[in-house]
Image: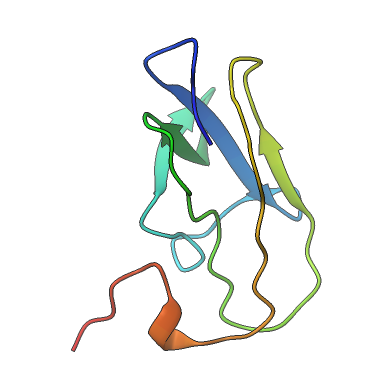
Length: 93
């Protein structure tokens, strides 16, 4: 994703109609209070791949991205396996 016409933009991320939990959050996710409710979001500041959600179990979900018109999204990749070694969140040892 990129914000080619602005220095940055916020993309709200919801799964199944709700903000992500901190357990589902990746290292790219931030939590902000918006209109009295905590939302999970990504601050797009540079052109790169952003990791949106880290579900720890198999399941069917609806992923919703609430994007400003200035956002550029190039590709989405979904992984269908659970592999703790490939998680975008650093694992504690």
